[in-house]
Length: 177
Length: 304
Image (tube, rainbow over all chains, first blue to last red; front, top):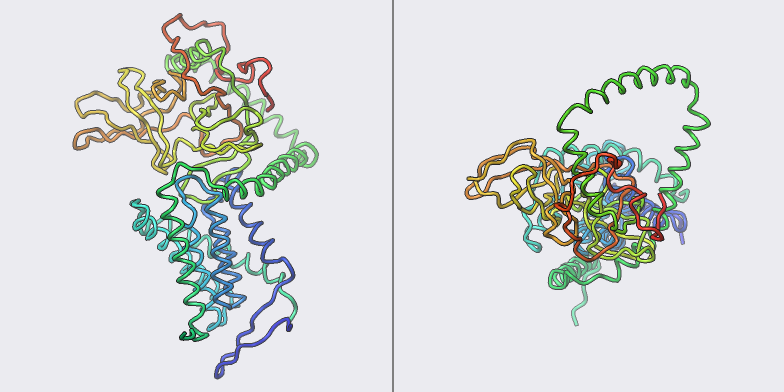
């Protein structure tokens, strides 16, 4: 199997990246563990959604909607499992499934390697993710979750900044093309 | 059978996966009281890493503070001496204040009335993986006698209750969680009302009629009516009061620092505690830090 190959549609030239064996599983597990205990020592770190950033990154890099949504679903359900009783299994699973699909679909059409593109996309995906969570809570769980708060806006920007640097680190896990 | 175009396959997969999870949510809403096996598996798989991470960070912090961060020790020593002098003066002033005496009296009463209560100390090793729920994981579980619905406290006040107990780990629902609640009453007026969480740092006190008098800064303690916590444990203080349609809208600032928990005590009993609060006056000679390690029943599990 080739380590990397190109999607060529007209003049579009977008590389699909492969990763080292186990890199995706290890990165996702590490993000979930960090997400669970980091806020205990650094309460401000609770603003981060590392599982979401991992979902976005591998979605954008792999550029395969099917694997993107399945990875998002897996990470989301594991995050639900580690959450409290107010978070039923599937709440974050649904949101991250959709984000995984969207990231993979957009990644297949745009060059998402530039830090500015990554910042903008992460900001947008974060807001969409929270929107899906709020929608699910309102429709299925009858909870009055607010659609948008200034805290959410700040969290989106903070996560986007962290994503730019995190994605650079994750780029090192790619197999050389 | 009509084949699905390849470009739409992922879209169909997305719909199927989302539908599956929606069904999963629906099943859970009906059977919310059942413990889920996937939670047990996931927590069992992740808690060793959380435990290792917690110990690793502690070791790194200790190593750093004991062996490397000594450059400014002399200057810090001088600063600490000055700070120590200031603190001594402050302690003298504080000892004369009635509010401090009241707080100590409440803690003292708890210690006296519940001296036989078995409790176990536990370390917080992890938190909730999302910001929507307020839970923490402890490094003690069923093997240490911890069961569901046991109360969790710190010397400062009520923390929450155990909602799941695994072999070596327990999950605690903090007082600030939306689903959390505790039987409480106002110290001065003795009006009883449940206090619950909203997901925000402040708690809410419900069902206090507009006609009743409540003062800002008034202390709130447990009433013992929930059969989880003994009476007179500090819950918090009234932060602000607004009139509502029928009941006042009262916010309560938690007594325990729920944003930064490191060690807690789990009350190892499912039975309602005896209400001995009127059996005697507080003993001024007893230590003020109410639920300490020395309060644990002899032979009960105990480690910091």
